[in-house]
Length: 125
Length: 432
Image (cartoon, rainbow over all chains, first blue to last red; front, side, top):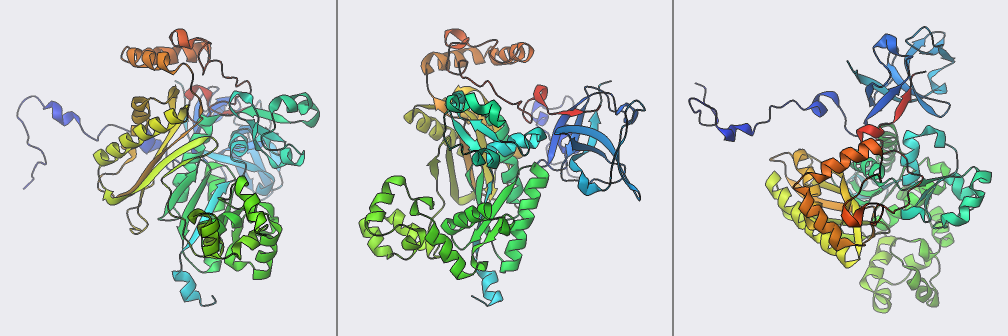
């Protein structure tokens, strides 16, 4: 037998039941670790191919291990830069997702400062 | 102590603090500042309150007024920044929340330092210290050093050593260092370097032939109590390895005021925490008023007990206040931002608030009057909208407000964006 935790009124729901936990909390769904997650804003078109446009916000988790294929925020010339990370047997490439922008090659991952790994793009539609 | 089983049982204290906190928080979002001399200025861009190692290397003393440095800044490549307390408050809350995961006993000591209760063999403790150091750097983005010792005083000293001697790689476990080396360090450092010894007491200690930290550590605690105070005796005992500095309940620091307390009976409800936060809000208000200060940022936190290692929870939140205030209603309301983070049923053993970005009170009465009267009419929202659109300082409150009141005349010409607390000031990542 199912027992309702609160008295169930027939007809119009009680205003007291407005106090519920069911509302969607974006923090809970989009942020895994509050200590390591930052929101950043994209400036430029070099990641269009990945669905990341100028003015979009990205959710970046600094605690994630960057892997081949990760969209990362890397420090290049003292600036935070967004690129696709490619780790191959011949070296490491920071790829733009737009043919108009060149790739950046480095010998190994240790030659890079990876600031964080992007987990979501808040794309403006 | 060579018996590992015994050492594992003996609790130790880890002191963790962020290296050059304000400058490091700025660097976390602006990598161009890395490797350059950076200073952060006090309110009104008055004087240097944080110096990066490169700035220290230029010979810039702590507290040096900006007007003296400004003419040579370009030549030195010196970068000066205004205090961005919202950023520092949020970074601090993140660091504290993260550290709470490594110990069931955490005491937030100031905006950039905490004490943690830790246990283990020397090797385990050093590993734990390195793990925490790496985690804070990786997750939050700021560098910390760790000192681990049997007492708070020694843990602070160990931390200072870890910061100054690269051989430690950022983590110094006091008991692992050979005794002669510890004594050499303590002989080299003046008593003024020790936590809790004020400048004015140094002369009196010197008169008794106590010059170095080692002299103080070898002094007779009872004599010290009779000549000075119980506080000084505690320092001596702590230097000798006997823990006796208790949890402090209220402190006023250079630029912050902290209230925190352990509860006799754990609090398990949001309502309970709400009441505690209200008390702190009012206490903070009274203390601020007494010191003639107003605060702009409030941090609220709660913590579960170290006796109850399961169901741990260390919620912490940083709240920018709508304006500098000592108003109990505003402070209490801000402290209540912690409540959504409280888990019902979990036993909270401690809670506290910290107010920062303190500045002297001016025109308090008209300002407070305007706040209360207009808050009901959502003037705050309107102000925020206008400010968002036309920039900070474009609109203010009443006759105390527009470029006339204390906050609006505050000089913060070199303020970095509030990267983590304002949607319009998020860090930019280049896609070019």
